[in-house]
Length: 331
Image 1 (cartoon, rainbow, N blue to C red):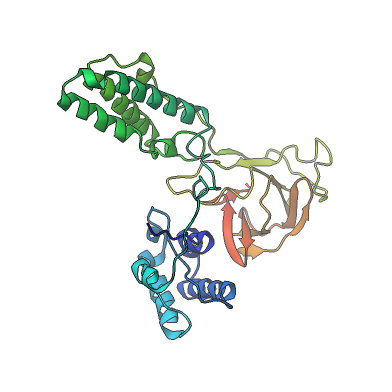
Image 2 (cartoon, one colour):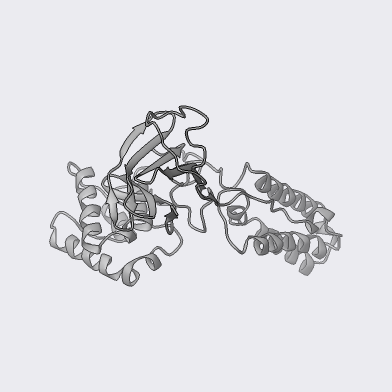
């Protein structure tokens, strides 16, 4: 068996970042990073996108970006686009003694197990598997094969993509019902009564986006600390939905944001902020705020309008925004 290891950083640039940039600029940035990282070696860089469709977020479904990218590759004698089969035929492979268990998300299985919903889903599956092992030999072959097929469907890990706090979808209740139906069908095929637990939803209520508008003008001392309990009293409060959607993208740039104005200046506070370069973007354009980082991140800038958002930059690229969609209204 031949294995290729995904270049996580470069692949995610295409999957999640470049749709917000111009095609030519994105292609230049992508190849510049590859040249920088491979300047001393003749290497294979596996670009493997997430399983979902990134191109729907691009201008013209990504065609301008792909044309710009492949034109630059064709014009550079040091670069060559290749398929996996061509690469395997060209490069020598090395045997691996072991592969560390984990996933491409944080190198662990936290998305699929650990939360109360995840654990309950696995426990119900384990019960069904044990009951199948005990009773499968007691029914006709047609019924046994049907029960086994329903069990295999329930063993698909994508059910647990939706359980737990990481991801959201309007169809989560339907996914939950389908999962429990497949497990129930295992018992029915074995001529057994499904456990009562399978008639109750696994899903729990989860916190989503929270937005409370400002109630008073504020004035803040920028020191990276909550100087007093009154400093941010009356500020607006915005908490993003910490779950991502179908695609596992970047985490929100902060756990919570507080904001307010004294009429002339805008003050913004980020709690548990990622380590990136922040700027404040008004509808009239971006501005570089005064930033102080301590236990919290505090920003101050002249007020340039009634709508704003916070943009975090990483490696010269706009990595994420808060809110991810739309604007925060000051008035």
